[in-house]
Length: 315
Image (tube, rainbow, N blue to C red; front, top):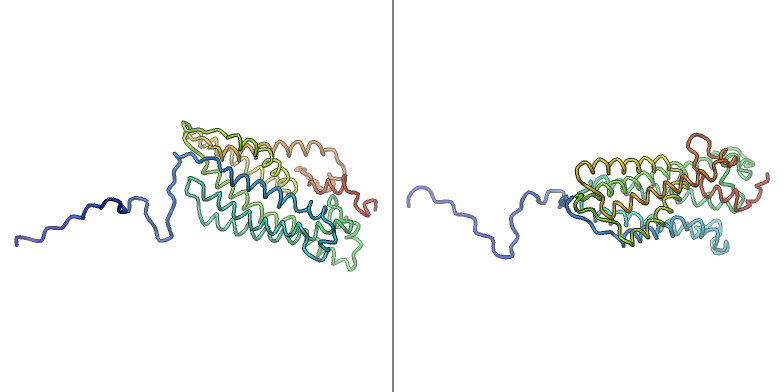
């Protein structure tokens, strides 16, 4: 036997066997999805349809269901139909957002997505309780176009410390709950939007189904922004999306059909918001409720002021 033993070569891979790991490999934290900006994602008709439908039914429809359904079915000291709608929304919406993120052709930051979903569920749950009580106060004469202390049924409470409790409830509903709900909601949409780019040569147009969904989707965003009083957050997200489109265009990238659907929905919603504000621009009562430079009245404030004659409104 001469010299050292010759090193044996690796055997050739058998047909059908798994090839050795290349540059993309399984790390200690799980399998990562390869980023692929050259692939055009098809329009996610199923997810966008379910997303728009459940937004309309479970979010916009919950206060309507509470008002329309007979009060005997849901006594004021029990959860209303709208509360059950809200519970379903708090489960279905994060599920659909996660499914939407899964279909992104780009690798997205998992930790940020998970923290956003957790915060979203917590904020929406806080809002569920506050909104349930505030909407049920309508049956007692509460007027949403007035502040808490200006409401006749509130300012006559004794002791006066009870008014502070109702203001705390309003804070949880309109400020803390909305912030923890909507900030992660728009953050997740923006994260998904950042992966909706493809080479300009493979530019795609919105299919007919997407064009039909733009109207209902943008109308819901109008309701979300006006009722949620989140115009600053919304316009900041829209500007960030627009800036990202301009930045990616310099790299020779264009939006795919899903990105176009999201951007057009936001743009049309902005036009609806401007029309809404212009229509109610000279409303003196709503002006007192929403002072300041940014004037975006809530639809339910308009409802209690001009549509429903609330008991005690003349007080």
